Image (cartoon, rainbow, N blue to C red):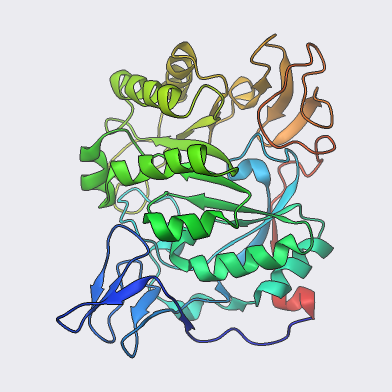
Length: 365
């Protein structure tokens, strides 16, 4: 077992020197240009001694075993536990961030739980987790650590999951997803105005990542849109989003509409009414998308997977608890033998909706 302590900083290679003496970070479309000692907007990548280093390698805000459905992934090893963790910082500036205490953190010292990649893989294996998820904040900004964890996990046949906003440049994107088995991409809205004003980023870069995943990789991915009242929940915008997905990705990518709750710098908005999610789901289905879900509300129908051919219920969920499962071991409908799109192996797990914190240092002794 690897008992080394994680380094204080870790060298990276997606950067280049500028003529004026600054260093440009090339990981995401922000392309932060930094003087020596400065940090990027993400806060965790910094110019130190005229190179970009990662300051959170091996350090986490905490580990937790979640149901894979919480990512949310409904078509990837359903019912199984996923060892989940994040670090600090984020390369977006979402005013409505639902994990702001982690993603907006500027206190690296709060990252009290630390582990080298091999430790995480061993812990996931011994805890019976089928996957390790990089979540709570975006793994793009700690990609070197995430990739090393993925390499270690694959030695134990443990899958790796990226929960991400998809805001990454083409070259690092290619390397990052080479080591990911699944992803949930947060398609926050379908307007440049929303992305620019409320996230400080750009829509097209995210659409490019989604198209890349579909066209250039074998990564299983699902999409999530957090519906915020009055901002991105109009019927017209949901129609346009659904049409784009159908045209560019196809009818079989799972799409999750989730409910917003007031948080961070958007406390003036009300929670999303369930009726808004029901309407969005119906619009997307009417446009031809086959696997559309609701989230963050109690809606068994909106959490259930239906066969796109015979329309029978294949995976019945109440919150994240699976009560019925009607797929073969390799994911075919037991009623009509049509293949359900996704990654299914050996039937459903029975983890349910449990969420179990894990202190990795204590567990590994």
